[in-house]
Length: 307
Length: 131
Image (cartoon, rainbow over all chains, first blue to last red; front, side, top):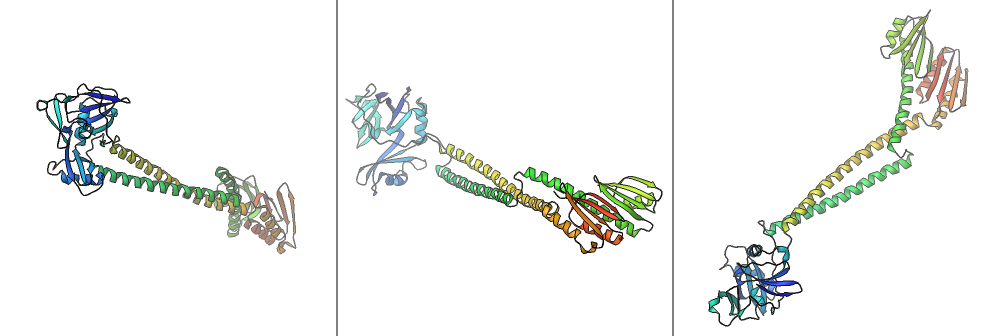
């Protein structure tokens, strides 16, 4: 079935029973059995506009199937129109033994075989009848060209068809709607991401401004360490005040207890009482603080409280 | 010819949309973490400043010592102060117990870091850390 080779791209005529064995890039010409062709007069100027009305014009022969359509303008308002089943063509291309990556272009025999009034390929006849190429038994053709062995003489037109190299059960319309929705989602997310990023930068720079303005250590670890150290030291001083005030309060409220001396050194508060016994003093002090040591000498009692 | 199946494109775009949701979620969490970080930082800075200006301001400590020493209630008593190695030593000698109590009370109500303290019924000696 090989017709001829041009720039490493071979041309093959594809029929439903044909087998092709080639490793090269292929330009395929579809036999008329793969498509329906009609000539219509449509009041539009462009082939693209004509394609839009073809589903209704082919409705009488193709009522239920989902087909793809193609039109070529031949005269003013006159178009040669095609209907084809993309999935069927794809199935037969695969059946022929070709790999889909080998396909360079796909064309209709109707537009590509005009050099011949009639011809035979693989014992099947093809003839132009009223401008349309039709498939007929070879026996009806006399003095026809047998293209089985002819390798050159075909020049391809620019009328390529747009074959989809996949079979989808989901309508392409829904796929596009989903694509638009998802793209909008991505766009919104990207915008929000940029907004959050800029807000994060703002808060970071706000922190740096505060650090510089208030002379805060740059590292938060260092700041926390200094803060904890300062807090510990100041809390010791607060505790010292609490203890001193408490001791003075107890002394004031209790008879026979006099404070002789209060001292503070190395985080220890030492209180020396006079005219009291150890038990009574300890009872009062230990209501609130734990005493670490106490001793009694004559009339004075010494109590140590750790901070 | 359409060689690329739109379903594949849809799947890729779907994955991209999922990724964009994931990264947006991460960024949103970062943003809220940052807001919390800023709040904590402001709070910590406030506490740090309050502590530093209250207990660790050399200027304020010296001013407080001056106020304490120059208090008119101690004009009949002997009160001295001296500075050495960032430590201020204040000593009040008084036979009046009321004056001693007043001095201790005034000292304790000021935010001065006391390193050493010695109170008897005749005198009070205190070492205040300046730095």
